[in-house]
Length: 133
Image 1 (tube, rainbow, N blue to C red):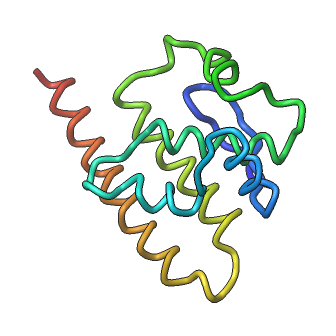
Image 2 (cartoon, helix red, strand yellow; image 1 turned 120 degrees about the vertical axis):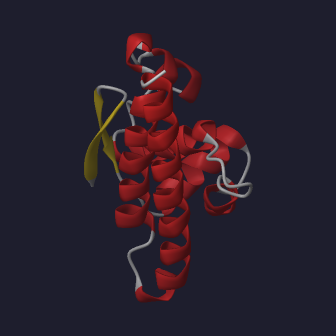
């Protein structure tokens, strides 16, 4: 299990088969395909990353609310462009630690890691540009 802070709130996340089942049950699609597709055009799909974080949180604690309610439980004042890069980093770390543990997944883990690293850097530069206007 991994604990990370997403938008100012600590979230326990755990991977494994149940995370895949929770994700499919809530969203009707495949977690792994969506994780890779979240970076298809070079811009992160933050909603998909939050869905993945939710599935792992639900796996860690079955009492976690359904996704729409879970999102509403975050303090909306914590949702800023600068914090988005941090949230992406936390979710990326949890995905890497919890879903890509084995040796066969090394190539996927590296590809996803490169995408997330590139994304975090771009978001950071964008946030810096907005702050210095």
